Image (tube, rainbow, N blue to C red; front, side):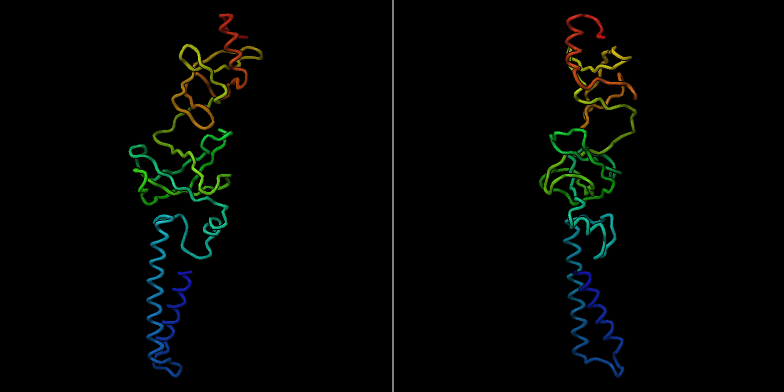
Length: 232
């Protein structure tokens, strides 16, 4: 609205100046009023832009314009604006290329969403650290809901995700069972140091394509412990 008003005022002021000295010229008072109104509306636009920058940051990933599709989607709730703050020292480098978000303690730990539009946000006075804004699409996150958000850091690492339901504990270590052939299972140690919403990201012990037991893993462990042999 401020943008449209400023454009209208500038147009009226420019027209009055162009007509100056012609048969269709307006009075000096009208021209001065138009110029004064244009200055007022320009200042109002600047103030509105400054207020907007505190809400959506200095460099949002859309062009200014009252008919911008992204802004319309934000206003309609089809896209959520997510503010993310990482604690001091948790994130190094520039703006992350992407972020992932998930419900905190949700009933579906495998449900997360990728956010590809990320930009700098004003510092959060309540949480020391680095803040960002991101656009969240296609989620069921509610307005004002707190989410778990993480960012990729360092070099990419090849591995697989073992579901949380597949992990069992024995001898102070975590294990999962892999079906080597129908009816035959082998216990494999896994590292749970890198938890993710879907379970645990591991780089050893389980390979892509392995059939991991996700139900009754505890029964396999009990059977193996009672028999002292590999479960079959």
